[in-house]
Image 1 (cartoon, rainbow, N blue to C red):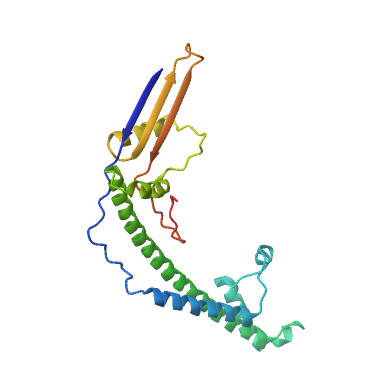
Image 2 (tube, one colour; image 1 turned 45 degrees about the vertical axis):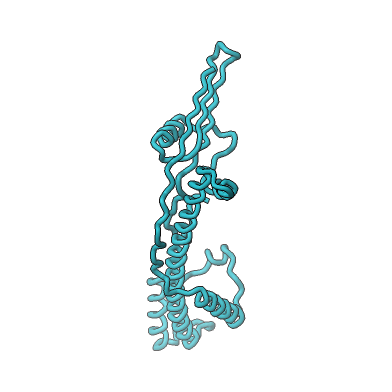
Length: 234
């Protein structure tokens, strides 16, 4: 039986000596908490004053919105109908239609404002999250190095933080050959931490056996810019 055991520890990232400036450092926690209370109060007021039930997905699909063409059609109809009410059906009310038009304009303006607010909030959220992650990563790198040096207390902290950087894989799923080759090269060149164990028995020996245990994990978690600003790993 041939057995190969490849181990290596990547050099830790050196955390910055001075924390980088936060672009949105003018935003204070007290301000954000007050803003949250104000927005919650506005939401409560809207829920109470508008007194409208939430639409189901099926109801939304059946209803006609007010896009550019539909809004133009409604607006043009209101102008023509005002001077030609003899063609109006019994349920038609020109004042109600005009009022609906003003409401559409106001609601669309509110929607644009809310979207702008959401974009600002998402940008600040992503920026603050990135700064927090970089700060936590610097602490993790220091703990990892201290653990390697067997500094008292460091190993327990490292074991608590290490699972967040382990690559998710089903326990029973064996890595593919290209994955193993990439991980072997990464270990040899110090780009990853972990261990790879390869066991092999030829077929004429006990029916043969081939086992690959790949216990490597990524050096750092990756970020993907999305509308919600979510972290890909973890």
